[in-house]
Amino acid sequence: MEYVYAALLLNSAEQEVSEAAVTKVLTAAGAKPDKARVKALVASLEGVDIKEAVSKAAPVAAAAPAAAAAAPAEEKKEEAKEEEDKPSEEEAAAGLGALFG
Image 1 (spheres, one colour):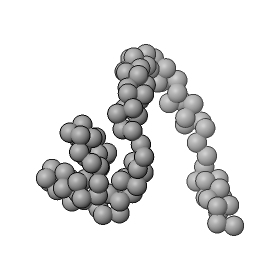
Image 2 (spheres, one colour):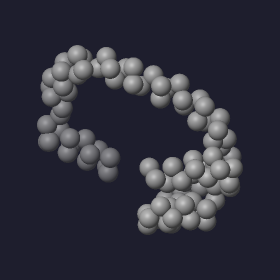
Image 3 (tube, one colour):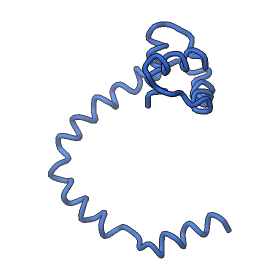
Image 4 (cartoon, helix red, strand yellow):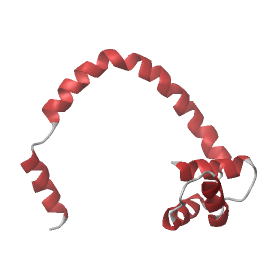
């Protein structure tokens, strides 16, 4: 998550979101940046208008607390359903085996 925060901070400061800049921000914050993760982040943000993406995501984030306030009553019902819906360990292992042929 700190990698995304570094990119958001750089964008907010109107700085280029580059590998060197993200690494510098993370180092300044006391984190040990992983070069592969920094590279992947910068590559995934290439061509993305961060301000536009954040403005589109803001209404979704604002709606989440309202939904969370209504959730406690439904939460108990969902917990009971989740316990019933979980596959056994054998079923889960069989499903994983299908991934590898």
